[in-house]
Length: 219
Image 1 (cartoon, rainbow, N blue to C red):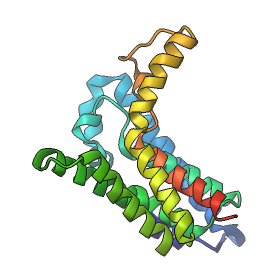
Image 2 (cartoon, helix red, strand yellow):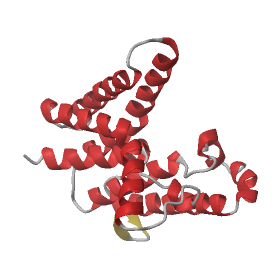
Image 3 (cartoon, rainbow, N blue to C red):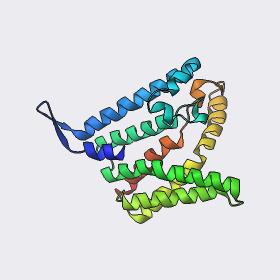
Image 4 (cartoon, one colour):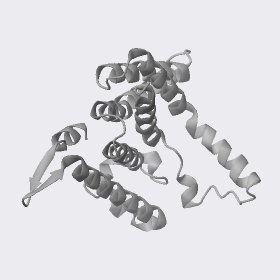
C-alpha cells in the first residue's frame, strides 16, 4: 500500500487532462474499502454463504479464524488508511507521516502481538506491558525515521498509541455496555451484527498516529 501511495503521488495526464494523483489514490482506496465492507456485511448477514466468501481471491486469505463471526481486520485497516489518505488530500499532515502511520499498523502492531503471545505462553514477564514497550519502540523509530516528526513528539505519539492499541477494545466494550445500554436505555444485544463492530486496533492505529502527528508536528 505504501508503494502504491508513493507511485501515484504527483500529477498525471489522463485523456489530455491533468489529474492529481492523490485524488485518484483516494478514489481507489475508498472503492476497495467499500467493497470489503460490503463483502463483510454480506458474509455476516448470510452465514450460509461464508464458505464461498472465503474462496474469494485475497479476501479469503485475509480472513483469520477468529474473525469469521466479526468484521475482517483488513477491513478496519483499509477504512483507517482511507480516512488518512482523505485527510492528506484535504491538506492535513504529510506524505511521510501517512507512510509512518500505515507502517506502524503493519509492523508495530503484529510485532507487539507476537511478543505478547510468546511471553504469555513461555514467560512470567508481564506480556501486556512488554507488548506495549515493543509497539512504542517500533512506532517511535518509524515516526522519527520516516514520519519526519521530532523525536520527543514521536515518543509521545508512540506511547499513547501503544496504550490505546492495547486497551481500547476492552474500554469500548465496557463503554458500550454501560453507556449505550444504561444511559440511553437501549437493549444490549451481543449477538447482533453491529455489536461485532468496534474500534479495532487496525482502524485506530493509522488514524491516531496520523492525527496526533499532524497536530503535534504543527507546534
